[in-house]
Length: 178
Image 1: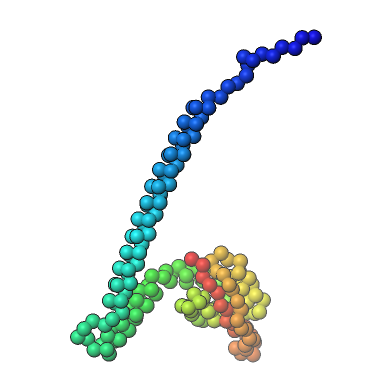
Image 2 (image 1 turned 90 degrees about the vertical axis):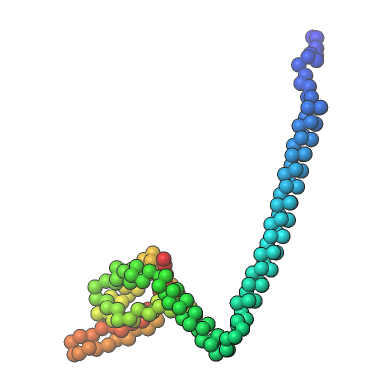
């Protein structure tokens, strides 16, 4: 038996070419890093300049202008708050919300009052139902609807309108999902 080794089939790597490619990639990455660092430092400088400008403008608006009495200044600020409140209320689509309540209210339920709560963004529903079963179905319907969340039955009590007519008076709290 004769063993032979063929040295011509061995693979050789061109180490010089590999080193050149690696150095080129490293140089490119260093250039990109330097460019990103310069961009970040420029953005941070711009941000600090804008923050100082905003602080200067806010300090101007807090002080009352010269020649105006304190009472007139507070009266004007109250007017501005009043009109901003009106603008906030007008920006809401009330008809859509009322339509959502109407579409989810079944037969046997009558709503007597819909009161929005601005700080909680919740609605308080006061109404009457023919029976507690109808009220239970209404609460379940509101909970199952994608238009309402955090549905809570706050109170309910049986009422008698006359000798033959009985019902349930209730109060529900919920949030309208927009």
